[in-house]
Amino acid sequence: MSRTISAKLPIKEGGINYSSSLKLEQGKVIQLSTELEKASPFYFGYDIQDKFVSELEKYTFDKIFFFTEPHLFEFYGKELYEKISSKFPCVIEFVPPGEKCKYFSVLEETCENLIAKGASKKSILLAFGGGTVGNVVGLAAGMVYRGIRFIEVPTTMTGQTDSTLSNKQAVNGKTGKNHFGLYHAPIFIWVDTKYLKTEPAFSKRSGIIEGIKNGFISDHTFLDYLAEVLNPDVKFTDEELYQLAYNIILSKLEIIKQDPSEKHYGIILEYGHTFGHGIEWLEQGKISHGEAVSFGMKIAAELGKELGLISPEDVERHYYLIEDKLGFKNPFPAEITTETLMDAMIADNKKTGRELRFVLLDKIGQCYNPEGDFLVTVDQELVKKVVENFIQRPRQKIKG
Ligand SMILES: NC(=O)c1ccc[n+]([C@@H]2O[C@H](COP(=O)([O-])OP(=O)(O)OC[C@H]3O[C@@H](n4cnc5c(N)ncnc54)[C@H](O)[C@@H]3O)[C@@H](O)[C@H]2O)c1
Image 1 (tube, protein in one colour):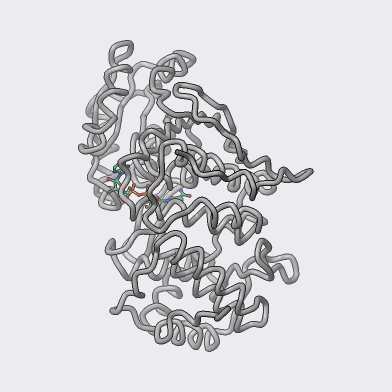
Image 2 (cartoon, helix red, strand yellow):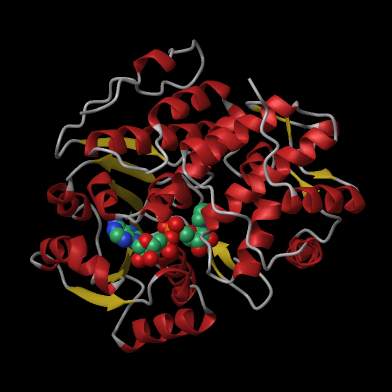
């Protein structure tokens, strides 16, 4: 049975039309758009694989290279692969699972394999999997013959609601995440929420955390909705997953719409990520991107409080949603110290070549924007103090 979500989703004039009554209709395809500078059609539905081939028929190509992980192929990929290969030449290619595929060695092997197996400028790559598969295949597509077409079929909450809405393709470097990559837009994105059923809880939380982030940075009413529909075991019916994914997608699209380049207002999507990237990098795969961001958002909230931007109650709202409602409540990784985290953030920051900069809130649902810049430079000694306190005294619960 689906939970009642209507109470918390008033349709605001000029606001986002989150759906409070989205009925899951098996096989029905809803069309959205990624809203990015290079916008791609974004198809959304439940159990919609029968319609995939007719979408593919709109394109002229010589061959499809279908990339996935072995276990995803067994779960669902095979069914889609068989539908495609009954009509078109289609080659199956496997990549290592999860973050293991975001290595230069895997990228190189993928590109060389494509050439060896006869990929041409008319070929299309298909990425069937989570954000990692999408990233490495998208990057290969952007590089082979200086760019060929690709399709994303995301199978995780992160893939369906976040990574496919960016056009950013990357692999990791020796000193940080996503150091090497490019922008390359898929010809279309095919989101079937049926795939989310088997996604592990840690991975599902990783996707939902970005939805929570979208609420904190741009729409406090979305947080009320999430507080109502989330549960710490991330157990949902098909219908609930369908509605949740759809509404998280809308929450991100609203932000991209205001800045399709993601370089000005869109930078707010990096909330919690300066800390998060450092933590993720130090943990080397032991925790997910989402869990790292969950710690990052809590530290960013503590930093905002220390700077006098937000109240202790606003900080507590972070802990409530992230720990009590989403279930991200593991203790902070014991091996990370204030010094190692500071060093990791400084190393990762080579990207911008400036001091440590953070996206911060000036209230729930709105980011701090002094002098027209959402990335705020903060004194490193203050950052150090906040991290130190966070590590030693994780949650300062507010009574009442
Ligand atoms: N381009 C961007 O803007 C952007 C945004 C967010 C994340 N990312 C990247 O995406 C990656 C994280 O993506 P992710 O969270 O999807 O992780 P992932 O691709 O590693 O998938 C998580 C795990 O779930 C498994 N899995 C995937 N789909 C499944 C399913 N339907 N059923 C059962 N198991 C399934 C995978 O095998 C993997 O072990 C990171 O590398 C991150 O940097 C990129």
